[in-house]
Image 1 (cartoon, rainbow, N blue to C red):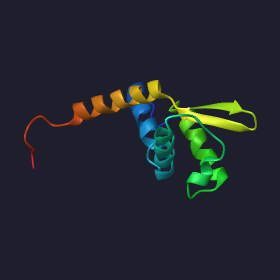
Image 2 (spheres, one colour; image 1 turned 60 degrees about the vertical axis):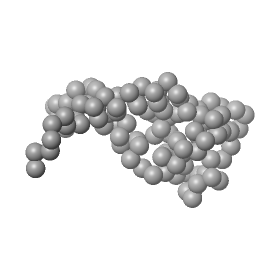
Image 3 (cartoon, rainbow, N blue to C red; image 1 turned 180 degrees about the vertical axis):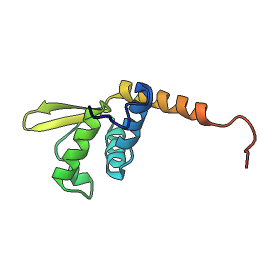
Length: 110
Protein backbone atom coordinates (compact mmCIF):
# COMPACT_ATOMS: atom_id res chain seq x y z
CA UNK A 1 0.00 0.00 0.00
CA UNK A 2 1.42 3.37 -0.98
CA UNK A 3 1.33 6.22 1.46
CA UNK A 4 1.10 9.81 0.31
CA UNK A 5 3.22 12.28 2.22
CA UNK A 6 0.15 14.48 2.66
CA UNK A 7 -2.04 11.77 4.24
CA UNK A 8 -0.72 12.50 7.71
CA UNK A 9 -2.14 16.01 7.59
CA UNK A 10 -5.70 17.18 8.09
CA UNK A 11 -8.06 17.86 5.22
CA UNK A 12 -8.12 21.59 5.98
CA UNK A 13 -4.31 21.80 5.83
CA UNK A 14 -4.22 19.82 2.59
CA UNK A 15 -6.82 22.15 1.09
CA UNK A 16 -4.84 25.25 2.09
CA UNK A 17 -1.71 23.71 0.56
CA UNK A 18 -3.58 23.10 -2.72
CA UNK A 19 -4.76 26.72 -2.78
CA UNK A 20 -1.24 27.95 -2.07
CA UNK A 21 0.13 25.79 -4.88
CA UNK A 22 -2.45 27.12 -7.30
CA UNK A 23 -1.66 30.71 -6.37
CA UNK A 24 2.10 30.17 -6.45
CA UNK A 25 2.51 30.72 -10.20
CA UNK A 26 2.70 34.31 -11.51
CA UNK A 27 0.66 33.39 -14.60
CA UNK A 28 -2.23 32.26 -12.42
CA UNK A 29 -2.02 35.44 -10.38
CA UNK A 30 -2.10 37.44 -13.63
CA UNK A 31 -5.14 35.50 -14.83
CA UNK A 32 -6.97 36.09 -11.55
CA UNK A 33 -6.13 39.80 -11.67
CA UNK A 34 -7.29 40.03 -15.28
CA UNK A 35 -10.61 38.36 -14.50
CA UNK A 36 -11.07 40.58 -11.43
CA UNK A 37 -10.31 43.75 -13.37
CA UNK A 38 -12.98 43.01 -15.98
CA UNK A 39 -15.68 42.41 -13.37
CA UNK A 40 -17.45 40.23 -15.94
CA UNK A 41 -16.91 36.98 -17.75
CA UNK A 42 -14.22 36.98 -20.38
CA UNK A 43 -15.06 35.14 -23.55
CA UNK A 44 -12.37 34.63 -26.13
CA UNK A 45 -8.64 34.33 -26.09
CA UNK A 46 -7.25 35.33 -22.69
CA UNK A 47 -3.76 34.54 -23.97
CA UNK A 48 -3.86 37.79 -26.00
CA UNK A 49 -3.68 39.60 -22.68
CA UNK A 50 -0.72 37.65 -21.32
CA UNK A 51 2.81 36.89 -22.54
CA UNK A 52 2.01 33.17 -22.77
CA UNK A 53 0.87 30.73 -25.42
CA UNK A 54 -2.76 29.65 -25.66
CA UNK A 55 -1.82 26.16 -24.52
CA UNK A 56 -0.05 27.45 -21.42
CA UNK A 57 -2.91 29.79 -20.53
CA UNK A 58 -5.36 26.93 -21.01
CA UNK A 59 -3.40 24.74 -18.60
CA UNK A 60 -3.39 27.48 -15.97
CA UNK A 61 -7.11 28.08 -16.44
CA UNK A 62 -7.75 24.38 -15.92
CA UNK A 63 -5.77 24.42 -12.66
CA UNK A 64 -7.77 27.38 -11.38
CA UNK A 65 -11.03 25.83 -12.51
CA UNK A 66 -10.16 22.50 -10.84
CA UNK A 67 -9.88 24.32 -7.50
CA UNK A 68 -13.13 26.13 -8.15
CA UNK A 69 -11.75 29.67 -8.05
CA UNK A 70 -12.94 30.36 -11.58
CA UNK A 71 -15.96 29.23 -13.53
CA UNK A 72 -15.95 28.40 -17.21
CA UNK A 73 -19.02 28.04 -19.38
CA UNK A 74 -19.14 27.19 -23.06
CA UNK A 75 -20.28 30.15 -25.15
CA UNK A 76 -20.41 29.02 -28.77
CA UNK A 77 -16.84 28.19 -29.77
CA UNK A 78 -15.38 30.01 -26.76
CA UNK A 79 -15.35 29.41 -23.05
CA UNK A 80 -16.49 32.30 -20.90
CA UNK A 81 -14.41 32.57 -17.71
CA UNK A 82 -15.13 34.51 -14.53
CA UNK A 83 -14.18 34.41 -10.88
CA UNK A 84 -16.20 32.37 -8.40
CA UNK A 85 -16.69 35.05 -5.74
CA UNK A 86 -18.08 32.64 -3.14
CA UNK A 87 -15.15 30.24 -3.48
CA UNK A 88 -12.63 33.08 -3.34
CA UNK A 89 -14.29 34.48 -0.20
CA UNK A 90 -14.06 31.01 1.37
CA UNK A 91 -10.36 30.72 0.50
CA UNK A 92 -9.67 34.23 1.77
CA UNK A 93 -11.31 33.38 5.09
CA UNK A 94 -9.26 30.21 5.44
CA UNK A 95 -5.99 31.99 4.69
CA UNK A 96 -6.82 34.83 7.09
CA UNK A 97 -7.63 32.27 9.79
CA UNK A 98 -4.29 30.57 9.15
CA UNK A 99 -2.42 33.86 9.36
CA UNK A 100 -4.24 34.72 12.60
CA UNK A 101 -3.27 31.31 13.98
CA UNK A 102 0.42 31.59 13.12
CA UNK A 103 0.88 35.29 13.91
CA UNK A 104 2.74 35.41 17.18
CA UNK A 105 1.08 37.27 20.02
CA UNK A 106 4.24 37.48 22.09
CA UNK A 107 7.48 39.32 21.36
CA UNK A 108 9.86 37.49 19.01
CA UNK A 109 11.91 34.77 20.67
CA UNK A 110 15.14 35.53 18.82
